Image (tube, rainbow, N blue to C red; front, side):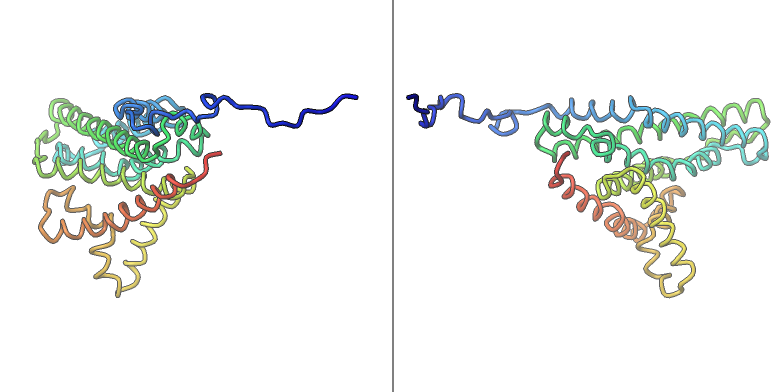
Length: 272
C-alpha cells in the first residue's frame, strides 16, 4: 500500500528571498536623463505625437504666409508675426502636455514604464521636464518662423520689417507657453484619458471666461482666476507686481492644484 507524502517541501532560503530592484534597495535606479530622453521619444515617435508637431508647424507657417500675402505693409513686423503665430499655439500646446501625461494609460505602456522604474514620482518629473523641453522647442520654432517671415516681408513684400519684440515680450511669450504646457500636463494627470483631458482643458477655462463675461459679480475674481486673461500682459511685456500676483493665483488654481491631484492619481492608480 502506497502512502502520500504530505510533508511541506523544504525551500531554499536563497531562492525564497525577494529580489530587490535597484529602486528598492537604495542603489541608483534608471538615470533621470535616460527617463527624460525616453519620455521625449514617446512624445515624438508615436503617430499622434508626430502628427501634433506637424500640425503645429503647419499652422504656424500658414498663419505667417497668410499675413505675408494679405497683410498690410505696416503690419508686417516681427511682433505682429509672433503674435499671430502665438494664437494657435496657445490652443495646441496644452495638448502636448496632455499626450505626455496620458501616454502610459492611453497606449497601455504603463506596465513596462513602472516596472523599469517603480518610483512613479521620478517618471512624473521626467514627463514634466520632457514636455516643457518640447514646448520650448516649439516656442523656438515659432520665433524662428516669425523672424523668417519678417525678413521676407521686409525684403520682398514691402513690409515694415521692424524688429519690435523686446526682451520682456520674448520672455513673457516663453513663460506663457510653458504655463500652457504645464496646464495640459496637469489635466492629463487628473483624467489619465487623452480625449477627456483635451476636452476639459479647452472647455473648462472657456466656460469660466464666458461666465465672467456674463455675470458682473465675477469681474473681480476673473482678474485673478482667468488664466487667459492674466497671461495677456506676458505677451505684451507689461507685467506689473499686481499682474504677477494675479498670474501666480491663477497658476495655482489651473495648474498646481490639478497637478497635485493628478500626481496623486498616478502614484496610487493600479496599472492594468
